[in-house]
Image 1 (cartoon, helix red, strand yellow):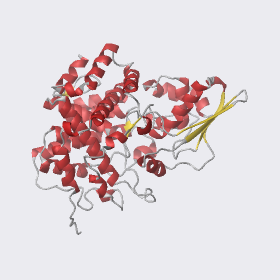
Image 2: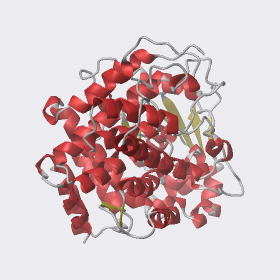
Image 3: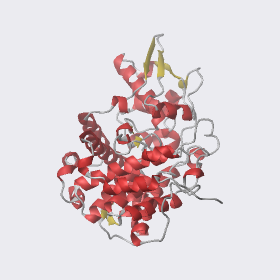
Image 4: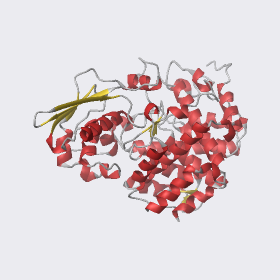
Length: 466
């Protein structure tokens, strides 16, 4: 095989990560990085009510041979290595599908756990953490966009869930470990080598193994940078060498994304924040229907049917015998809209075994359907999102007394064009942590995150929970 190449994208990225300084980053990007951190922490705490969070935390301690290390497992305050803490905290961050969605996936549940874990171990400052987080988010977005299959090719390989997720943690870890340009370059090559294959079994089977996939990607990304730190020969330029990484996912690689306006355009600002614990393509229907119910003072018991048009591919599944997994429920527009109307307080309470089999919920979900228009395909929806827009949805609510209400929405709260304010992020954080943290601890943690630029030693993070 001819593996000759002449490009230098991997080197450009590596040089950017190593040389990026806090002072280089625009103020609004730093502010967004703090708020994204707050949200990632909040949804992780909310996820701690799900047993799988405890399982992941226990697994991390087991794999470590017991407690010992400088990084905190947020679930229980136990200490382990940064890589294993990243695994446990990443699983928790994705459990409720509440974190974020960049143009290509969920970088926060890899970048934030790795960033906090290595900052604790290395006793980095808050500025160091924020700089590494921005580096990770910028690198992740560019790498993922470079390997996105073009329209018409999504049926070949499509979205390989968590495959490029590994770069979110590896880039952040490399920055906080102070790897030099060569080591950082090698860490990208190693991350590409460690990335999972294109299997989408979690979506095909609606399995919660998807949550462990997130944790595994976070762990592997940390290990990639640790291996580069330990020392290897070669492995540079892994994003340039044909078939080293990029061509594994698409026959038409767009490597120009790797350094596109690097240091000028901050794709961190384009990350969507999920307002509700549900898949991103369910966000607009939930926001729209809830707004309508409140606006028109509609009695939920009086709803005859709800039609959301156009429907979204794979997101209108209804199960009359109830739902069997978190993923299955979170990906179902009928389920999430129904549970949001029956229980207005979002959290793990939406996804208990009892709730997923609740007869009243199943009855209501059965009356929530996709409309008659051709469905929005996922590839078309992502194309709209990447172009700065979003699929518009129209909801029609018909009541048993013969009334009809119709409204439309394109940009739900949390979309980059309708982003939450700082106050709204804080209010959401209070909702996310209400069942886990005492109110005074919530406020302390919020104050810590919102003033990260003043934190001298990130190992102080864990003391908030003591």
